Length: 289
Image (cartoon, rainbow, N blue to C red; front, side, top):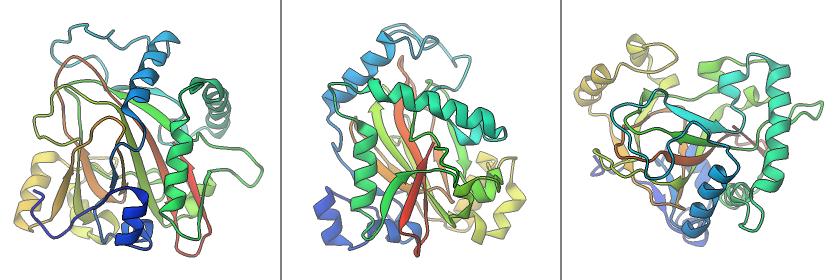
């Protein structure tokens, strides 16, 4: 899978900028499948953060550490934060929920460093001439800055895209103006077993430019998995599998088909996730969840 010439940029911020003077622009253009930074947030702090989720009862429905899981749990994930994709159809609900999330985040990271600040600083450093800011409307209402997603074992996401413009059609939000949507993931808690060996697989197939793929749409811009695998093999679509350790960050272009394979074991996979809008001539990068 990772034998193609479509390779990610990997390293610390200084190394990445030596390899490419504008990494995010390269990612937005599809020149690379991902940008990967190892140990960008200390793994010790990741463990402390997970413990705080349990201490504050932010994940009441998740199994306690060491609690056995047999088969598929009753739901895919629990979110700590505000999701535009999930509740954006009701603007009042969305922005009210985003305010509550901002209040939660004011104290959630005390004495351990704020991983969301780390994420924003990294985006800014890798985007010369631009500044990453929390997405906001002209009237000052702010989106969720980022979201923690607690994924359950034995669940996964088939090949799909994430896009305010192409999938959700949320034209009444300011983030709709960005032509390219990128994604960010910080792995906070790793799963116990990964049958494929990967946390994510990114395909060199951009939804908007590949009209034939639309015949395989299973709803919501997700592709019927086996059908897509046959298609990818037939047309020799390149792909890249991303494997992460706790504290690693990776960025990807969410307009390219990507999937999150199922994993196994007895603990959730927990990530800090965000999307961000990128346009060449816009000095701001809007980040949201």
